[in-house]
Image 1 (cartoon, helix red, strand yellow):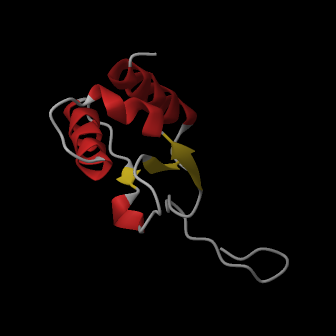
Image 2 (tube, rainbow, N blue to C red; image 1 turned 180 degrees about the vertical axis):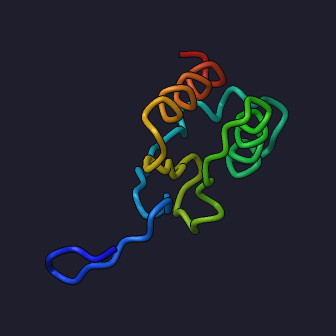
Length: 92
């Protein structure tokens, strides 16, 4: 499919739209880890257990631990359910 300005879109694709969010205040909940990168990995594990898959900052070469990438090109109900699960994990 082409747009009027010759841009091309692929039906069914769902990448390219994301938010970069700071969850670093919630890394302190992971006790027993010696550094913030380990706490970030622990938060990733907790999110995965709730079937939420966010790209962690370490994988994106973030300068500081706790930054995550949220893709928001999915259906609205999927985004809302995913965010509900994120809030359950971080206790909000």
